[in-house]
Length: 258
Ligand code: FES
Picture (cartoon, rainbow, N blue to C red):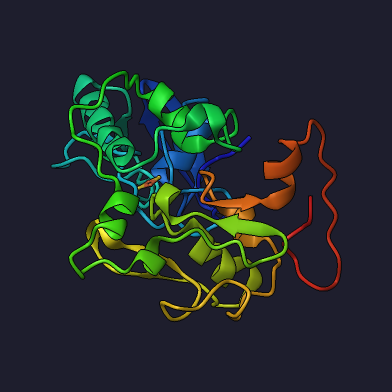
């Protein structure tokens, strides 16, 4: 079970109400995790149990009585007596709008994608009830091929240089989970986000660098953290998602191979 954000370490317990359910959690816990403790799942893409909350995907918005706006539940700490709503009509509309924007800049090749059935973007599109996308699809690869000079085709090219995984920037939602996993889990700092807007992408060094020529140590933390098929194991592309997995951890790193 994924609680959304790491557990807080505190002796002091805070009691709040989420969707009518009273829940007590350690001080410092996120609203998202408190909701999960109460059995309520808040849609999310950039938050995980393993990584510090980042608040970039804007899918986990909630309403808190007495507070203006719709804060991200993953980055909002609980407070005594807080009354949280996670499933109002306003929130559902906002989440659907956010998902529409993600899908408008994502290849619609789910049926042939190696991550089909194991893709959090696909899951979240279903979870928020997205059926139609009002925006014209942005084909960044088409733009790259026909660019008048402002987009480097190499910038958007698939990187297959690493022997264990591929990197396909066209499927990246820029949630930064891979970058944070590289830093927080592996401590390598090999990845960063470069560019802005539609042209932003994960980079393993300078624009012309590949994963193989970067500081990447092939630990796989980024691949495990990726919610889409942007970073995909080559073995999964070749033979499909395994039905069973065994996780082992060796002294080389703490990622845990599976
Ligand atoms: Fe909270 Fe992404 S899960 S902003």
